[in-house]
Picture 1 (tube, helix red, strand yellow):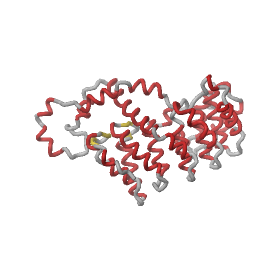
Picture 2 (cartoon, rainbow, N blue to C red):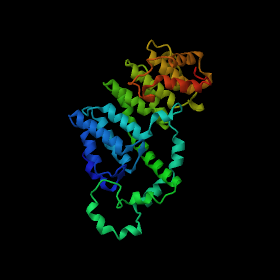
Picture 3 (cartoon, rainbow, N blue to C red):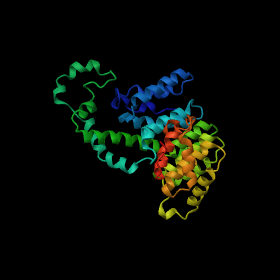
Picture 4 (tube, helix red, strand yellow):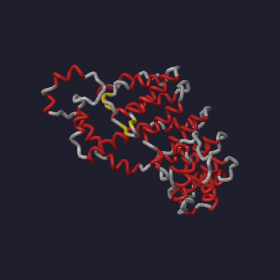
Length: 332
């Protein structure tokens, strides 16, 4: 477990607080039998490789080891690690609703970021060369000191270039997490319901993997646990509209059947999930029952469900967003 963690030159990578030398021990701590140690490590990782939603150079490099933890059933708190991975991939998911992940836009903004990163790694500030000897004694400090070339380089960038570089960091993390999608699809059959729900949530943000993810998500939509079924339904919607060449396929037919059946489910959160998905996929052409179901959530006082990760479990707020996709304004 984590055998290659120390093969990464973490001191050469950076995160929100400087050199990423603390990351391997934090990743290892996620395996600790002590819940307090695990919580502290998770909090630290959220603070340094996912600082206020920003991904950094070290973020993508941490992902394979987090995936390794999730793959092992003996790892404690696997849903929490899965959620960290998903946030490393997409940032704050509530900002992407109701449309889903804008992958094409992200790739366009990040284009050329690899060249900026390469230049940053080689950057030398001539003025600081004279101070090199004075700074040697501080080179072990984990901060954005003057000896961090990438930090100095950032100070020279125009705002558009800095945006491109950080978009590239985020895209690196997104693609690194994407390597775990086959495992996430397998985890939809895990014995632990929170793991199943977290896996469905992660799959929702990878539209390019729609064809591979849809069949297991359709099966998960019938899960006996309502949070799993609901999360799978919303994920189906976020993966996007069936391409024209697939509209007559068995998969498209099965998707329509599953979504229509779920709208009649006796569990209210499952009906909510079906309505959210249909609003996303069918828009104004959705059945009138979709708007009716969503409107029913607007005035509810019990519309918070922590087990459902979308929109932080605020089902009422998500229903309001979905109503607008129907061309229907939520009631004031």
